[in-house]
Picture: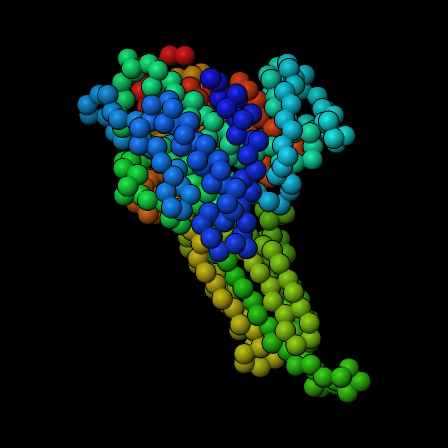
Length: 404
């Protein structure tokens, strides 16, 4: 079975995660796909395939050659809930001409707006009907891993070390690595398969923190408010204005960090702001957190102690500092790409992956592409041929004797 055929099956499972849920997985519907994947793995000969109590899927293929590393392949099962996630109605555009595509729901997938799509010219392009996400992030990765495993199991002449497989819940809400069993997984190193254009290898990501700002005001009847009222909402607005406007996501790219306001609530008596703070450079990251605190200190000096409180929590760190001593892991991926005729490239992730946290948990885990495009939206798509190419790349990672 080819990867895209599996993919078209997997996208029928609604696996949106839910940040407001305290459970793991955050939604029971993720368990439906988890159980289906474990059953499929067992059917193809992965005897130890299982779903643990937290909804993580694990399995392994025993080594059939000596002195080969144990390599892990990881993808996440959940999808975002910021756009409708079901029912997914995929369609395949045969021999895509590189132009604008009118989706079944009436919207237009236009390369002028989504330039990455133009690279799929001449390929078979899988799209949605424009009413839901497609789920290529990251069911394309799941399908490619499963298909690579099937190839290894069907061709015993291909020599490899132990292959460790992991499918995680709740990656889209930042919890995918929370309960990952690194010790039980048993890999020397791993790759998440959760990226974009074929050829991509990511081993740099943002250092990340969340920032919560709480402002306490003083409410009084506006008719007698002079020199008495302290409007918490206006102080919160002042906090926003004291951070550099050019250092927001919409004005940054590449290695440039930012402060991003993700939510705000306010009345006269109390207001709150939610931020995420990002930077690739660890020194600049720490400076950004200090700058955040400095704004609060300035406003407390202006309006009184305790007016503004700031809580900052680190989320994850740039895996580069942990991967650089192990660059042979990246070189192996580069060689696998070249083996299928694709020139590898690397770019910093302007976000994070499960791999970033797993790397700091002792499992070095750079990220590889899936071929998916326009993730987290109704214009998500992926090319059949790119999924085939990534399947071949994964098999080459595990054995340099493979030829499709």
